[in-house]
Image: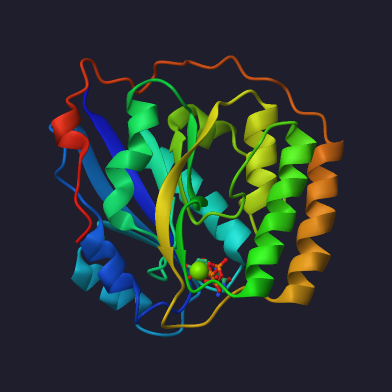
Length: 256
Ligand SMILES: Nc1nc2c(ncn2[C@@H]2O[C@H](COP(=O)(O)OP(=O)(O)OP(=O)(O)O)[C@@H](O)[C@H]2O)c(=O)[nH]1
Ligand SMILES: [Mg+2]
């Protein structure tokens, strides 16, 4: 059965980057995969929405006020389900992540091997990440590995794919961020997580959202809160998005 993939981009004042990101998203790479694009505009005050429309976004969901990245990703998951997505993909709008690797990100879902796929920068290549960012990423990734008793390479990736069931069950318990609490939530519910290597290049435009103090005072307590909550394991349909037989030649795109 044809799989409808919705790629959603959380965006706050990304007018300089979002157009290129949208144009880079491969849309016709497999006869059984349809790709649509949804922008979650988190109260942008610049031309993010206009630029996204011009570049070919199919849906725009605008929040009147800036609510934070965690809230934006929560909305992205909910709206993707509401729009009828079989698979949802979250992609940062700042042009740091390789949109061209979308088929590789989807492959474990389309093969029925995973429910939640993260693009891993530390399994792939990284261009320009500052030392303190790198250390912060190592720390929060290691913390998640310990808490889940499962080795993770990159817990803060801005490129992830979700099965429909994972989107429906995912709970993001704070508005500031999603990266860690979402993985802790889904893995504890029994969803299978996979990481694939991606190429990453630090942003050259716009403004970073990460502020050290806010990150520590919001993210650490949220991790404690998520881990103290009981969550129910979910009966998972392991083959919900499997395409049979998978035509590999169609799932390959070249780096532009
Ligand atoms: N600045 C900001 N970005 C948001 C917000 N909500 C959603 N976003 C988007 O979330 C994505 C990730 O934000 P980034 O600031 O790039 O966070 P990051 O990639 O962890 O940090 P950098 O390494 O500095 O890029 C981008 O596409 C932003 O446009 C928000 O409230 N503020
Ligand atoms: Mg970024």
